[in-house]
Length: 232
Image (cartoon, rainbow, N blue to C red; front, side, top):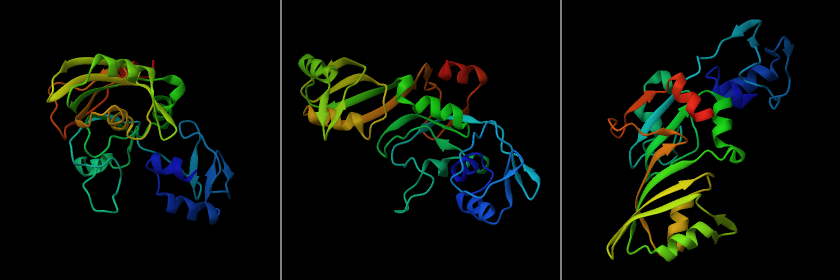
């Protein structure tokens, strides 16, 4: 319940808990006393003191995440976040997955919890495509090893696709596709193979690609057609 209202932009988690404990909040006409009560944000109707709460319209944006910002709403270390790049009316969105501080490229943010759940569910295997630069020579043998999977800290790191574009003793360039969102998966994968990532950029999420005209820090609203391509 707390998480749902927060993502809908209706109230903070703290506010929601206070309303529930005070008996002020109803879901579908029923007074709720449990802050952990399960709801369906897209379908259920919420009322505070008998007044209907109306959330913001569904919004999803594509952000070209720059290097050096973190994918979080606030940072205890005071670092710049992706929300510092957005106008006030988009502060209630939440990221669909994360990109680490050094990674750039396509980041989706939305208040559509159903869409977010679909895109992040491993069962749907929605691909994410990255352009990767690593230090040193990356060989075809390493490509095969990566595609068979590398075990790291008890997790199998295995891209769904890996294409070696260019290799030299100085650096190598690859295109990699993932269908799961393990923590720092690509950085761990390439480090296990002896090649440190120096540049990492997400260029596609599903069939949606990063717009060529966008610069780091730019964003745009997704259209119904874009959403259809993501969730089909």
